[in-house]
Structure formats: C-alpha cells, structure tokens
Image 1 (cartoon, rainbow, N blue to C red):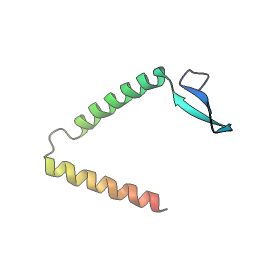
Image 2: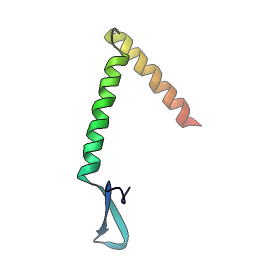
Image 3: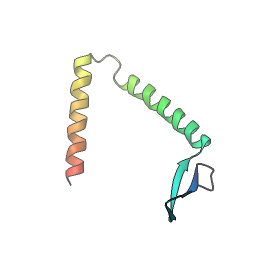
Image 4: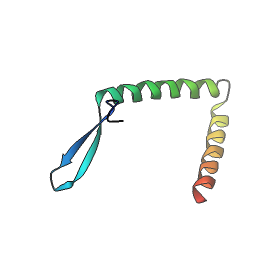
Length: 71
C-alpha cells in the first residue's frame, strides 16, 4: 500500500520502534468513492422496502454477523 501511495509511515515520538500508519490523500479519495458507491448500492438493494422491513432486514444481518463472530 505504501508503494501505491495509499499510506505513509510516520515515526512515533515516544517510541522510535513504532511507526504510525497514515492514509494519504489518494487513499482518502478512494475511500470516499467507495463509500459513495456502497451507499448507492444499499439504496438500490432496499428500494421498495418499507422502513419497518429495512429495520427487520438490518436486524437479521446483525444477528448473522454476531453468529459469525462467535465462531
């Protein structure tokens, strides 16, 4: 990621052994685009659903995520 210009490594003042990894402007731009695409996709997926159906769906998805994290 560093070679692609997505992150930089910065020294940590209190401990020279450590490096802080920081996203570059290029990485933030990509993140912004991906987030926008994700939001558009979510809107498309739930088009025609009522608010109650969306809440129920997200509840089911959260339960599935919880099941995965337990194993």
